[in-house]
Structure formats: C-alpha cells, structure tokens
Length: 242
Image (cartoon, rainbow, N blue to C red; front, side, top):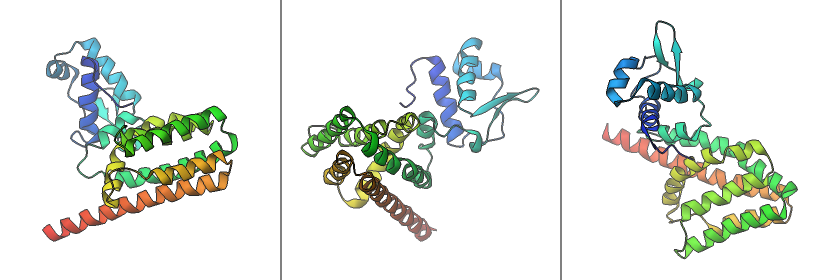
C-alpha cells in the first residue's frame, strides 16, 4: 500500500517524506521550526506533531534537544516501508535502487517459491492459479497486466506460509510497478510472460521445491540483467552528451 494523502496530516507526511527521500532536504539538516511548518501547511500544532510522529516512526527524522527535528541518513530509514520506497522512486536516477531491490527479491522470492512447493495448501495454490488466470486474461486485454503480475508474486509469498515474507508484499508491489515497465520495454514486450509464470506455478503444484526455486531465480536474474542493460544504456548516453 502506497501513501495516499487523505487529510492534512497525510499531506504533510507525503510532502515532507517525499522531499527527504528525494534529497531536496538532505540528511543532517534540520526541518524548519514547528511554527514555520505550521504556517507553511496551514496546520494546527496537534496535526503537525502527529505528522512528525509518522515520519519519526519511518526513521526519516528524529527530534533532538536544542537542535530541532533532524533529518536522519538513509541508513536509518525503514526501507521496508512501501511509502519510503515510493518516495525514493521519485528520484532522478532510480535504476541503481532497483538493482539493489532485485537482489533483495533474489534472496526472498526463490525461497518463498520453494516453501510454497513444500508447505503450500491447496487453497493457496488456488489463489496462485487465480492470479495466473488474471495474467492470461491480461494477454487478451481483459485484466491489468501489471496488477495481475504483482498478484501472482504476492500469492507465492503468502503460500510460503512465512509471515515475514508475506509482510514484504507491499514493498514488492511498489517496486514491481516501476521495474516491470522497464524490463518489459527492454524485452520488447507489453507484458510479462504468462508461460514463464505458469512454469513456476506448475513446479509449485508438483511440490518440486528445487525446480520452483530455480525457475523463480531465473526469472529474477533475467529482470536484473535487463535493468543492468538499461543502466548501461543511460550511462552511455550521458557520456555521449558530456
């Protein structure tokens, strides 16, 4: 779930969080004073302090005596928070971030596929199949190709029966929305391969943990290679323009 401002508190969190994550407000610096922020956003003191609590819980800021509200370095941020990832994706150059995230996915999703093959319930398999059916419908224009792809990966996390893997689904959703467009463009296709995803599903249903794990790893390694190609292309363009 990404951050969708619903009221003034959410608006303050979104605007300040985005400005911090994109570097407009650099680490080590202080936010404007409480009174200045109250005037900037037209908010009450109570509302502003609630927004500061949210940003503090995400690791973005901390309040220090006689120094005010200080912006924390990126190493202190809760990068598993989908809101933070969503804000970071607004940076000018996010491909290196996506490459790091692919490494996170490589550490999690192949293992989740193996666990789904070993321990997944029939109900869990039905949910993966339903997501796969949505991907099939997407090839016919009857469903959203990105949302159906995300649903497939999320259901495998759930089928792993590992609560920690499942808790990462929102973070993976945010990153997938961005990376899928790039990898599909690099492959010259409009949507992810239904057949590749079906092979993973078939291996899980066959309780072949090793095959499910390897197929998922192969899929992610291909995505990483495509993202790396895009990084190389953009770097080459910048060198040519320099």
